[in-house]
Length: 260
Ligand code: GLP
Image (cartoon, rainbow, N blue to C red):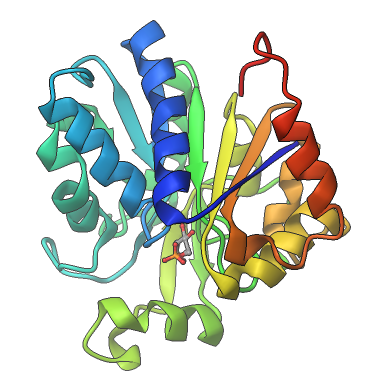
């Protein structure tokens, strides 16, 4: 696992946008696993800026989102499909048909989950999966005690996550209790995992994910099992890392031939 500490959210966004630009420039048909929540917003803003500047195109890329709420009406502003269209896919040249979102409105949600897995496989798997991290260490909507082998399925949110996400709704009572999320086993099959952590509220889950035991009590700790995982955090999210000096020194001494 590589841990990269940048000064602030803007520097984190630039660093992650560089990784995505390198991938899409070398492989225009890349399959991107993208996330919602506030952590990746700066990355999307930067990618949109580069697209508008004419240096970055997504016309052949495919996107799979991590998760979606169950029970929101189509077009609800807090639905991840709507959020993603407004923040990214609707602002660049991605073909709408190449943007895949777990179907939280399907009549048969289990069948839709199996179909989502099949679509990821048919696309050749995910090249790069962008991840945020919840206060309880969740990735996607894989709450603590999620099976480390889990696939796309229905999950029930904890009260902590519903409270954290209430800012996107009129009130916490409006936050759905059920969601569809890619599983931890699904996420682990992506070829590169890139996890973003911003702000002091993420210092504890980041420390648990990076330096704690691999445990379903902190789903993000599974990044330790992945051969190519990059954790990119700002200073505020880095404060509880025991080996913080080592991560800084490793990054500073990184040979030019070694890519992220
Ligand atoms: C939600 C999303 C996750 C996200 C997490 C953290 O629960 N399902 O994908 O990583 O929130 O959100 P934020 O980035 O807003 O802190």
